[in-house]
Length: 259
Image 1 (cartoon, helix red, strand yellow):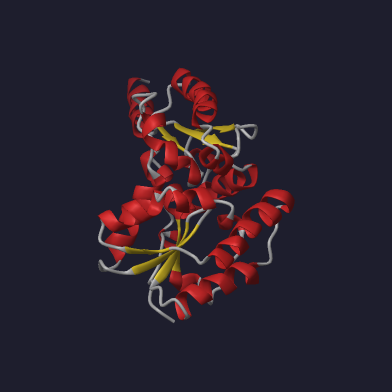
Image 2 (cartoon, one colour):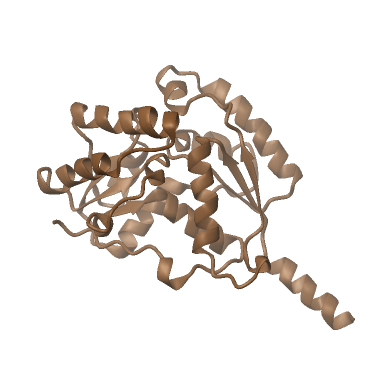
């Protein structure tokens, strides 16, 4: 009996409860959860990680909050989510929304619980796998681009950001807002066409899916070697931080070589 109690105690220590501030958008949060399950090495329910997901769909749109300078309204609502997760005694917090990372420092200042910085983790993943001074295209919202959320960190690590042209960016925003947020679906050929343009005409060495709505699109094998998905990076980090094991066959594999 005593031995069993000790084993249970060790198991509890090994596991960490993950807090997720989701709903930005709900489809992206659903994909995040599905990938955590898919990427986890598990033979039984108990092998999966424990998490609390707050699907706070009524949060103000992040792009509008940033571009219209309504930061405080967004942050007040996020603070309530932080309080809930603190009460639940989570060990780590993740936010599956790239644009929301514009507020990362403000949100982290609200709590002593570590929040995973998806942007920095993604760029570090790039750096770990590839040489510096690589040209990386950024597929993201207007707010993510205009506030240099990714560009600043890419430059810090010796990588060169490529910002889409206005016409290209208009197409990206249409995919995010008119397709995924409105209907939950987008023809993968639209996004793949933009990615191919970045790789071939703009001579990017690779691209980052830096909006979780774009992570909802099933892309073909033809472009798979040339991009890294920030949501996948967050999923992997969530699993390892919470005591789970990533399936070796599903670990992030990105070559980022020019076509």
